[in-house]
Image 1 (cartoon, rainbow, N blue to C red):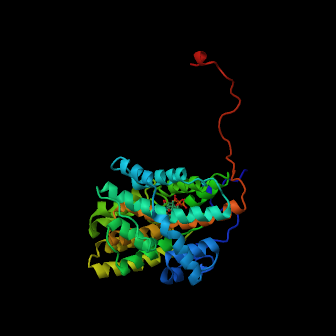
Image 2: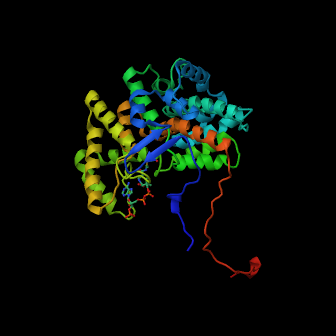
Image 3: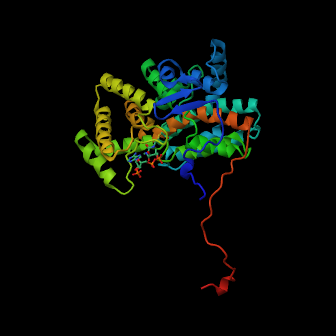
Length: 380
Ligand code: CMC
C-alpha cells in the first residue's frame, strides 16, 4: 500500500532553525525563546531581528534595523494609484496580494536572491505591507492615506497610518504584542507555500504574494475575520450556544477560531490574547465581545469534550475581540496577520534560498487508464 499523507500531515520536508512547536504541551518557541516571554517583553522589531538573524539584537543592531525601516514605509505612487483604483468593496486581502505583486515592478533587483538582497527586500516589505493595508483601508472609506512617520516603529506607524492620529502607548503595546504573536509559526500553510514557491528559485515577491493568497483562506489567517463575522451575526450572549450547536450539527460545520493541526491543548498565543482581550474589555468598559468569546469557548469545550475531540481556541479566536477593541474593521484582521507574518515568511525564505531543493512531492494517480484517442467529430 502506498502511504498517503493528506494535507502533508506529519511529513518532515526539511530542517529549520527558526521555530519549534510542541502541540501536546502548548509550547511555541522562536529561535530558543518561549513566545510568552517574547510577548511579554519584546518589540516586534526585536522579534524580526531574532527571526532573521538568529539572536535578539544589541541596541546598535536594533537601531540599524529601525534605520533600515524608516524609508521602507513609503509606497511608489503607482501602487497607491492602483489601490485607489481598486473597485470599492474588494476584500483587502485581494488588494494586498495584488499590490505586493505589483511592488516587484518597482524593484530593479527583484530577481536577485542573494542573502543581502533578500534582507533588503524583507526590510522593504516589512514597511510597505503595513503601509498598503493602512492606505487601502482609508481609501475604501473615502479617506486620504496618511503618510508614514519615519520615526515610528511598525506597530505605532501602522496604527497612525490607519487612524490618522498618534496612537497611545497602550494601543501601540497591544499592537506590538499581536504582531509578536503572529510573526512566525513553523511550516503553516502560507509559510510552506512561500518556501515551495521560492524553491523554484523564483523571486521573493512571488513567494510572498503566494503566501498572502494562502493566508487569506478561512482555514488559515482568514479565520480571524470569520470569528468576528460569527460573533456579529450571533449578536448577543444568549445566541452563542444555539449558534455553536447549529454549526456543529451541519455537515462539516466548523466554528472559526477553534482547532489546529498541531496543538492538542490551547494554542499558547490564544492564552495570551485571551488575557489581552480581558484587560481591554475591563479598560474600555465594553466587555461584549470578550464575554461572547468566553461563552463560545465554554460551549465549544463542552461540545468537543462530549465528542472526545481536542479542539481548542487558536490564535485567531481571541485576536478578533482584541482587534475589535483596538478599533479595526473586521476586514483588516487578516491583513494585520499578513503584515506580521511577513517577518516569518522572510525568515523562511532566507533559509530556503540559502540551501534550496525544488519542492516536488508526488500525487498517487487513481484516474482512468488505457484510453484511445477519438477525433472530435466522432465523439458521442
Ligand atoms: N469546529 C468544529 N469541528 C472542528 C473544528 C472546528 N473549528 N476544527 C476541527 N474540528 C473537528 C473536525 O470536524 C474533525 O472531526 P472528525 O475527525 O470527526 O472529522 C476533527 O476535529 C479534526 O479536524 P480536521 O479538520 O481533520 O483537522 P485538521 O488538522 O485538518 O484541521 C483546522 C485544522 C485548523 C483546519 C481546523 O481545526 C479548522 O477548520 N478550524 C477552523 C478554522 C480556523 O480557526 N483556522 C485557524 C487555524 S490556526 C491559525 C491560522 O493558521 O491562522
